[in-house]
Amino acid sequence: MFALRSFARAAPRTMSRIATTSTIRPAFRATSQHFPKVAAFSTTRNRFDEYSQQLAAKLQNEIDIETEESSASATGSDSNVDAWRAENPAWEIEDSDGKQDVYLSRKYDDEIITVQFSIADFNQEMMDSEEMDSALGDEEDMDVQSGGANTKGSINQGGTANKNFKVAPEDSIAPADREELRDEEDESGPAFPVDVNVLVQRPGKGALKFSLVASDGDFMIQNLVQLPKDIKAASAQDLLKEAHSEFYYGPPFQQLDEDLQGLLESYLNARGVTSSLAIFIPDYVDVKEQKEYLRWLGRVKDFLE
Image 1: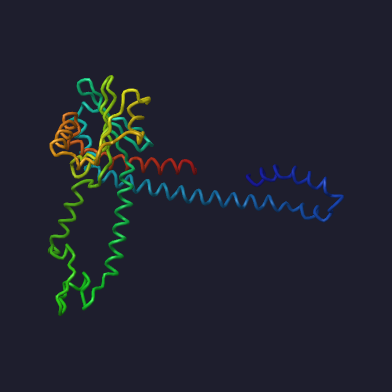
Image 2: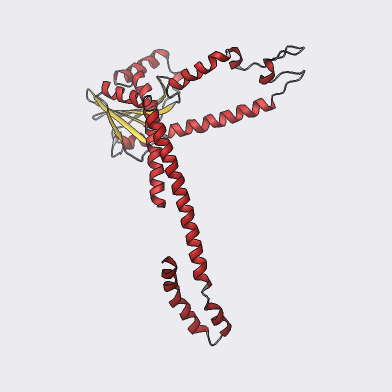
């Protein structure tokens, strides 16, 4: 059917060319009667459809695998997220399907507190981890010491005359305990840092914008900036998205007086930016990233079909 439609569209154009050039190049008329371009176009289109079908089938296979794995491991980060939401009803979550940024908001006295983070940190952490593993592998391959120094594989078989050892950390762990250690690491949940922005707004006062990192159940303050009340922004989300590089962010947080550091941390803690939230955010990133990956697979597959 597709070849017939292609022939019907191509035939009038071909016949027109034949009529206008027959008195000049009669040889072209005989060649054109075979319509070689129609056949080539049809073959190319069929080949394209075949590639699309193969890709769509592969995407469906990935969707099936990821869905099965998600169902099997739904007791980890998912349950942590559900428990935190039940225990912290003051926080409202704004999370749009297909978007990377997540926003939490709540009120504190006359203030509005808005927290922003992104699932992009999950993928960045995976990329950094892979690069580090590759670099460590290259270093081990090249680290051959003089005097017969041993690699990790030969250390457990004995030493050399000059006792020049290179011992890997896991060599001090009994083989029977290594599997248990791996299980404990797997069950500990997400262990990647997440960049977090916190905005504290007061009527007629502008806002304080904190840059934090959530890691291992704690928040580490990087810096903060005071945004004037006359700054133009449609919403708190716009204020969080803008870099505001024209304003002074103060010195690095670690250079501040220790008492001042402690008071700033207590200030955020009173507004709900606590260790509980620092644990919740990586869990939420873990859950959302998996859901968005499945949605992404589905959208690409739907486009191809």
